[in-house]
Image 1 (cartoon, one colour):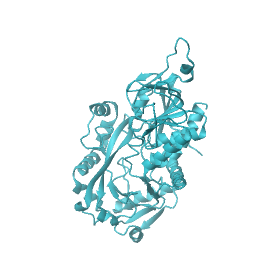
Image 2 (cartoon, helix red, strand yellow):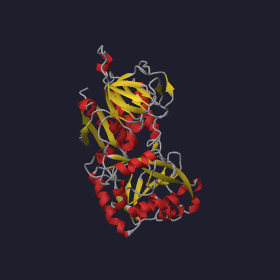
Image 3 (cartoon, rainbow, N blue to C red):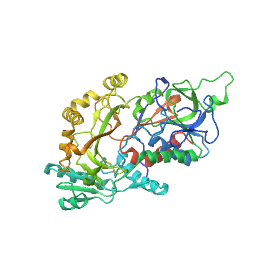
Image 4 (cartoon, rainbow, N blue to C red):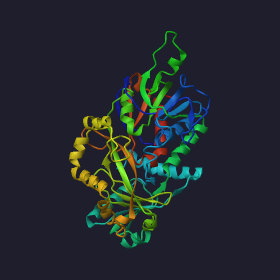
Length: 463
């Protein structure tokens, strides 16, 4: 059974602003490169669709694929502001196929992650996409962590995660010879995959079914069409006008937004509520040198501390054979700020004045200071990693890539833990469905999320 959508429903009318989405004069290939239009040409000035998806990340592409496979007679387009698809959260993902153990029982995250992981493994097998079901150990290294580990194990059983077992020191060594720990949860169904490859495969499926992918289209305005004196048929059939920063426009009947780091602004752009606000958190990874990769076989995670909002630094093997260590979690001063000194005055002012960040920071001050310290000093991170694998030294580590997590935050400073979908009322609002909060494990859950979105679009828009 598909769980009901969680909604934040607000009044939607018309609004102006600036943001996300591709140029409608060409249909991008799965790699994001322009190519001739799919399924019938549409010029920039006259493009029209039954449904438009704003956002070309893994959730947007999975949703587009699900919609066109279910409704092949509809014209559906994806708008992406970059020249390539899946380059932000999807393209900076750690690549872990999560099992669903961490999430509150009966939550959307718990249900959709378990369902989505099974669907993702099946999809990868069907498409010949490489993945590794390398498993994961969640390791307690201190006696005080064992009760939390046991509670997490029970939560995983409640969530229906298959194959879980509690193991002792000797079994930890059998699975991870260089890892020390008192007790661990063995999650054999955790895996790794290249999520951008998965997302581009979704895009290819979508296009082969007749969908159009429109890149270099940064959405600036969403409004209702102004009826012409001649009562144009196009204006009545496609009442929503989406304009980009170049002044070009497309028309459509319905809109689904999957805008990730800009989900709050796109919602506000359509006249809906901007809450919950997105606060960007940068996660920096370290790399284990190639000659030391033998130290790690599968995913090794710490026992999460419920007092703090993130899972902690962990060991993650990659499909290319490298080992990523991380990420930390520090405030990013730009929504797409992948480097420590990337800065946007607009983004910073938005975070300070419109979100509950100040309250979050005061509630987690020591955690935040520790994360900032570890981000600056490799030795601090290595000292933490040595709790799990004592053989690792500073000389074994290189600085690696970073990602930015789009985390929804309410005005009381609480991280919004579950997936959130937002609909509204009014001329535009009753034609729009917003995906408002879809951080990890959204990539794992993408096929399950897309099925839910397709169900909701069909019901809400009476397709």
